[in-house]
Length: 478
Image (cartoon, rainbow, N blue to C red; front, side):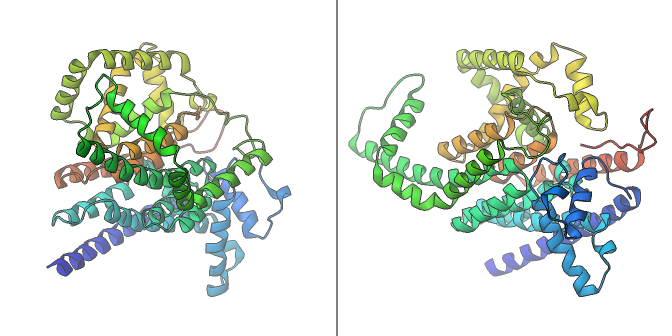
């Protein structure tokens, strides 16, 4: 019976992957016909990749406007160049815009498979219904609107996702040297991916801390020690445990032996920052780090919107309101702190207001800019979204949650520009780790993603416009 179910799951997976790839190829064809020239950031990425494709790797050939490392271009050359040797295609064909964009479509296939493997590893396989749920979850995340859209343009998103997911998978299987190496590959696509390599190390540490914490709790239970009481008793207990745990040389040496590949990668990253004089390469004027705390709130809202079947329900709202009433002093303090952070740390990047091709431009202009008070009125929504996200992760240990939220904070808060692309990786990591939702919710989520994708592709391909001072065709996008 088990072997039969596994075989059936394999058929479902193959069908889902094949259908998704077929639809992607049809969409890719439509994109290629509509966009024969580089668009948006492609005006930097594509010429640079073509120079690499022609064998021009010197620094003098580097476009100073590019702010990421050359991982995408190097992988692209490694994929398209063999095609010229195998099929005898000319350099003009293998280094063409269409061929280079197709590399991201290949990454999307890899991402689909990695998502499936991650769901198999992270989610329990003891229920008959879980096979369908895993396939639906994989399919849903594979067509996640922001990620799926950038599979058709020559951006770093698809490759960045591929190497980060691969590193996470290897970490889960305990192959930490390979995980760190793949983390380095992810870093070569986008420097901030180093955070998710650290998350892999954090996952290992959280695992060991959870094991030690359970042992500690069992020991106290057997000794029948009186529990610590007070409003922050749980926090105090965990803090006390961490202090005692970190004072042990045996514990620290064990953690070092497990995480040394990530530590080595961390030192390599620090060396890069020192030599480069910062994280960003090339044009740094538009990528200055700051304490943009509301980015965390935007991520919470973003997650609430795209995961609403799992995070938003009458039961959830009722439970939240009950908790707010029960712990009203704590929630009042959280709300006041959030209002203060919105008031003092809201930044508006010049690109956000200057480029009307992005949806974020219209969100900001028609919501936040039109009504100054709106950013404060949305604070209760942020608090609810944050609580709902934390509540959905309660199946994970407190130490795993701590590692995840530290990495989430580090990957979002320093970004001055509000850009939905920056939320893709933390969202996918979050979505992978919540318990498998019921099939009905997954179908609802998938249906919504399909509708959003249809609308964004239709608008991008059909609803073009021109700026008054330019003859170029402009398109709306994420």
